Length: 68
Image (cartoon, rainbow, N blue to C red):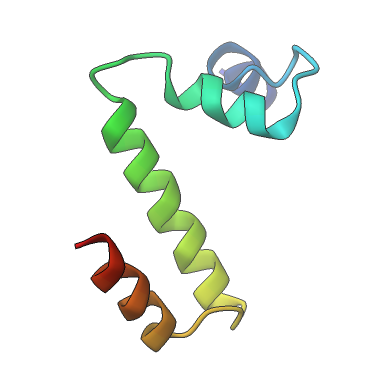
């Protein structure tokens, strides 16, 4: 399966959804996996922001303290 076909089938890329809706629909496809998918996406986003030097580890630590 090619990337574009995979995206259309599993991430609603061919439905013209707003980005936030596409992400939400993708995460909520399977209620059992939603918490895992949401946590993974958030972790990946934070990692990307850290790599781009938009967040540093002290900010990440403060956010983790706030949620614990």
